[in-house]
Image 1 (cartoon, helix red, strand yellow):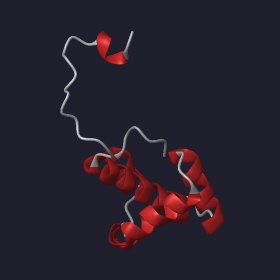
Image 2 (spheres, rainbow, N blue to C red; image 1 turned 90 degrees about the vertical axis):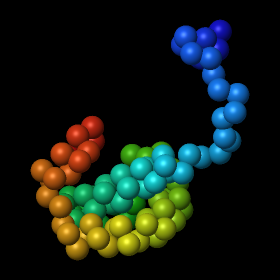
Image 3 (cartoon, rainbow, N blue to C red; image 1 turned 180 degrees about the vertical axis):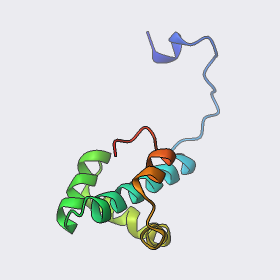
Length: 97
């Protein structure tokens, strides 16, 4: 039995292959917010912050760094705005703060 057999709707045959850009953007935003959390709120050093992100997102260090650099303006905005834990909990209630 295949996974789609558990659902009543037929699977679309015109699905686009590759990563969904919207999901990548959402993941990158969460990655940046967690970078802010570990670095500024938890006050972890650089190495420990990156290691925590590698473990949390199940991606290699190179990808973590590439994605943070790619979203540098958002990271800069976070560090300038300095959202509180309360704000982060409201925005991302499913993450452990």
